[in-house]
Image 1 (cartoon, rainbow, N blue to C red):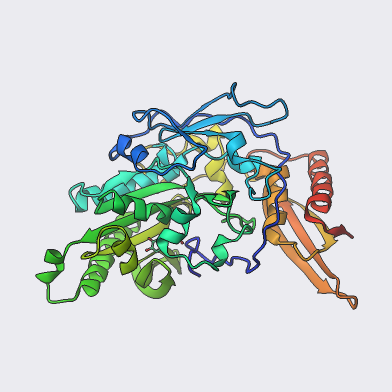
Image 2 (spheres, rainbow, N blue to C red):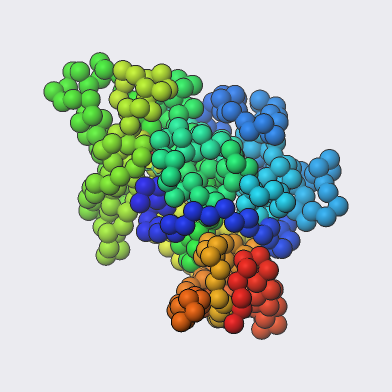
Amino acid sequence: MLISRGGTCARALLLLSTRMAASSISSNLIAPASASRRIHGSKPFSTQLLSYPPFLSRASLFSSHASVHSNKVHKKSNSRVAALLEIGGVKIAKDDVVRESDPTNNVPDSIFSKIGLQLHRRDNHPIGILKNAIYEYFDTSYSSMFVKFDDLCPIVSVQQNFDEVLVPADHVSRSYNDTYYVDAGTVLRCHTSAHQAELLRAGHSHFLVTGDVYRRDSIDSTHYPVFHQMEGVRVFSPDEWEVSSTDATSYAATNLKKCLEGLARHLFGAVEMRWVDTYFPFTNPSFELEIYFQEKWMEVLGCGVTEQEILNRNGRKDSVAWAFGLGLERLAMVLFDIPDIRLFWSTDQRLTSQFSAGKLGVKFKPFSKFPPCYKDISFWISDSFTENNLCEVVRGIAGDLVEEVKLIDNFTNKKGMTSHCYRIAFRSMERSLTDEEINQLQWSIRETVQTKLHVTLR
Ligand code: DAH
């Protein structure tokens, strides 16, 4: 799979443009990101080089923190999540990102409520701790040569997200079923590779980009529609490989592998590793690094030698470069023993108090385990039905109380009608759920699935 989640991501091969329902969940106003963020890299620069979608205004060049204000100016009487975010100096109003009546927009409230939380900029959060551990590796191994960006706005153009990294025009990741579109030309970035080209154009030769990324997907303990990635790029000039006895591509590939093997050892200790050839649109050759950890082979990251076309288009014709991308949740789940991806979003003190800055790999102690409750839902699907759309409806209603949505039965009758039965697992990470609460959620899901997804309940 080209743009993968850094795991076994099977993206549905349906190209759809079904407008999703905005969720009916009443999300709380977002709490500002922790004040204990470090300032890395050149902040004002990061705001300067972004090309903003036209509706985003640029705030102060000197304020690069994420904050949330109640949005008195933009507030509409009927909006439930009224907020104005500011990320890296960019102001984002909810009404600009969530527009239910616009068929080119498929961002629900529940996703908007995640923009600006910036888990990766919290030094006491597992995602922030892991980011800082990777920074530490690069700073020590490369004398702080890599410039770090962690506040680039997650709202990017289709050009940045796909075209500039050579994602083919017909690639499945461009579909409305897989990606959150703000409008036909603007998306919530689905990978941090979206910033490669602009940073190259701005003249950077060594950089790391960390950020929240957004993907429509199925629901289980390792998938969440928002997660975090880190991207790394290093550009070499001819004098660097000319003194070696190898060609530019082999020089970059060897350097890349050495760098990333060192990173894996820094994070996981003396583990066994292997390289697997793969394909990404932006690199050639492309590889995945796997480590043998807890008795199985685990994919750690994707990487490769940057496609020459990307360098040529961005003012680096005579150079060669490598790039890598890694998913922070995946690694944090194994390093901290975190069993469910929803826990990263929990604000429960019993969880948050277990992690502190600089302590990589402290094992999470579950404070208690609450029982799951299962509910089934069966319906005749329509032509436009997709599992991602179903999951978004379920997530929009049940929020983080939904643990898994699983297809348990699927058949087509003689008339050619197809029936799906999904089992929804409800479980809170923090408390016991009541029957009444779950019944209400399920009832609401049934109703919304029928009206928004045009299926016929059985
Ligand atoms: N963008 C890829 C993804 O989201 C990850 C990736 C793979 C990034 C290879 C890279 C790379 O820079 O070289 O799955």
